[in-house]
Length: 207
Ligand code: ADP
Ligand code: TYD
Image (tube, rainbow, N blue to C red):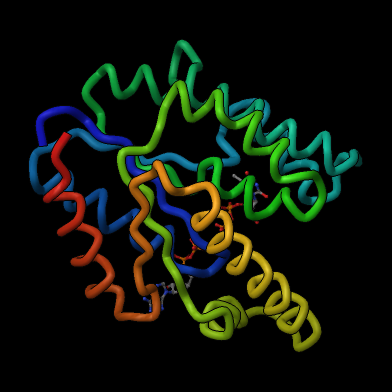
């Protein structure tokens, strides 16, 4: 693995993204490779704006939110100080929790998916993932993992959302993923088994 690579981890809430990213980071470090983990919405100003909208502190409409996710992604890619392209040029391998397939899966509920895909084609042109992992977990399992601090009605509402998002992801991979390097990982397995599966795929990736 000579050139740094760009890895994206996608999955519904509670699918295990953060858990796996933390472990992958250590694998890279143990192998003496430079690694940076990041996420979307990003920590940049547009990502912060999105988080304020998501917690209801700022009101706006869904097409604006879809546009903000795109703007945040462009900044995440191209920011001249800490953008992902800059970091890759400095030799860092990058793992991002979420990228444009999250917009396909989540914003398609509110705005036409073709519009989202067209807008995001610029992101794909600027920085196409070398590998996309999708942690495919049974929605009931995800909901149970997330349920610890929630009440009954919330859990049910959450399960409905997870089922929908999981279906949207799988449909989007089918329809828009033909020219992508996507690995659908069985995320119902143990943390270690998933980790091994992902690392084996990364290790055998040839640039
Ligand atoms: P995400 O970042 O996708 O929302 P997390 O990594 O935070 O998901 O995981 C959600 C919860 O599920 C955490 O409590 C985590 O410890 C647990 N978890 C993650 N992966 C697994 C797994 N393979 N088996 C069982 N529990 C898991
Ligand atoms: P995230 O912080 O990754 O949540 P979690 O760790 O619980 O999976 O993402 C926050 C939310 O943002 C998540 O519910 C999905 C949503 N999202 C979109 O709707 N569109 C997007 O393009 C992205 C990147 C995220």
